[in-house]
Amino acid sequence: MDEFDSLRREATKLERHLEDRVARYQQLAQKFNPNAATLSTTAAVDTQPNNNNNNNNGSSILESMETGTSSSLEEENSLQNEIQRTLSNLGDLINHKLSPAADRSSKSQHLLLVKRYREILFDLTGDFQKATSTLQRKREQAELFSGSHNRGIHGGGDSSQQDPAMEALLRERSHI
Image (cartoon, rainbow, N blue to C red; front, side, top):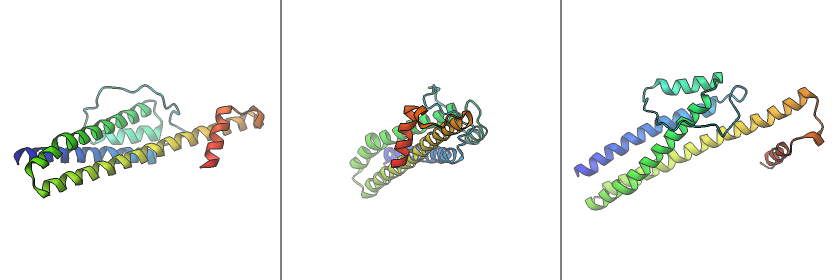
């Protein structure tokens, strides 16, 4: 029983950490400023884990996204990688440690708790994926609009001069 309780505490700790990070990522997606942010989605990501767990980290990410500093994309990617690692850790803990411990204890409350943690993991994964797709849509929209603004500024509004990639994006957007 001590083993299951310690695993439950660890899962609760990961759950809280993950809820905090996903909430920060959702705020980042809502505060995304397409005019100030870099449109490149293939930027290099810092692979060093972020061990700074203070509450100022999330606000600095949001502030940098709003002001458009050059490190905002790196910070976004860092937060995204941290969420993915935590999702993976929580999934591994549930599937490889908590579930077998619940099976060994044969208590229905332990099995229900494992089911609850799986549902939490599913919900947080869905929330993270929604926020990620929101950011991606905003980037694509900014790219579309920046292309149309650039053509309008330079007087190249003729459709025969449009970039083939831009035409594909416009067709895709019209189908959505």
